[in-house]
Length: 194
Image (cartoon, rainbow, N blue to C red; front, side, top):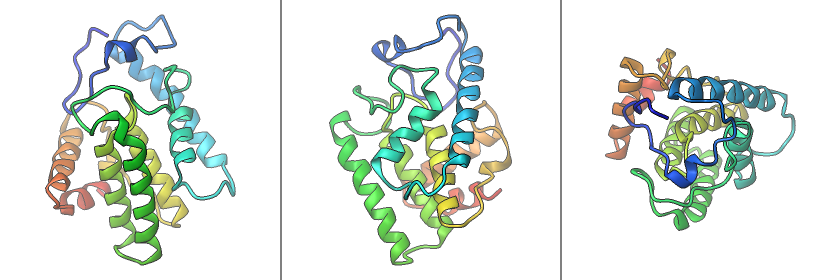
């Protein structure tokens, strides 16, 4: 794709880029629009899902990514196999993800944090693990909203704007994630409910 990436976006490795299913796309804008249609279908799938068990399991986490990107990427729902500018080595992804899911269940069971803080910490860690080649932020936000629904809480408005586009909302989101990297979740807690 010839268009430049917005701040905080993860570039695709050439081996990952060949996994693009629609061959007619030529710009990042076209790709984003195509992916958004795929994500809307995943959102519908998520709403129709009933009594499918907890979202805090590896199968659900991967299936949600597959639902979000299956019409776009051949590797949808598969953990990344390359190093990125974020996240650890690919071989650590299954263990890190499993640990996050287990810790989140513990936080819920023991009321370690408020529901919003559990969701924010979950989202931050999932994005930091960066389990997939692409779509981690979008997947992390939808996964977090699925967790909130499971906890009978309202979904986050996520800054009430588009995080995927360049601009003030994305800048606030990235700043809040960087603060969380340093252990300060206050900006991210404020952002997600704004």
